[in-house]
Image 1 (cartoon, rainbow, N blue to C red):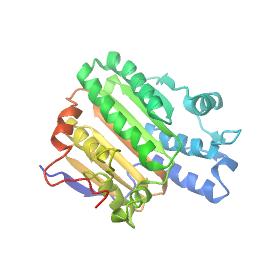
Image 2: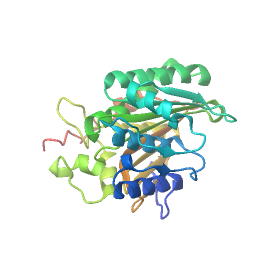
Image 3: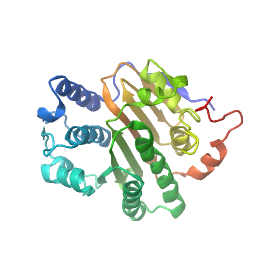
Length: 298
């Protein structure tokens, strides 16, 4: 079945658009590390928006003694002491939202060891609160691993941010991954065959089969597999980089271009825990479909 495609004229994530505009202004004024961001008017913080901000603060503060200053209201993981533990000690931060009861965890990752630790922590919170089977959790782990290792392999960033949300009231497990690296278009352009001038074109290519495959480093199927798994699950998969985004909700896809510039890449998976999640089955069916081959050396 073909997905329904829609083009969105307005930015579908207004808080994220506002944040990206403020970050761009701060950089234009001399650098994020030398200016204080006042973000008290953003209202409710979605995990995607928070992940982008943290990735930008992480990049701006690397190698410096002080973490860039930001003014916010009622965002626990952005308090100075928590930021220092996140950025300097690599200690994850978990909290429970008042009202909704959702549990939110924030982690900085830099290598496979820290990625495994993050995903194990997510499982330790998700499995008892959402009553998930071990097979379901294994599929979520595989999905999370693909999305996080993309940062290490392709972004050029030293570290990335992962924010997990365990929400029993909505039967959801969500994972937002952000970095302040080179972005999808520049990453693909390292292979001349994928040199593109538009961010949306690059995102669509990156979500295709074997787009970033390299001998000995994987088949380049991560984003392709992820959006197929989330489509079958009925969840939501978002990829945003540069001035474009593509979002898959079940059988519906929407995309936009000409958005506020996002430094690096944001990937978000919102998974339904009341539906089957079978990463292994989709992987087996799509890992090497007929007619698809590794294109990195061609």
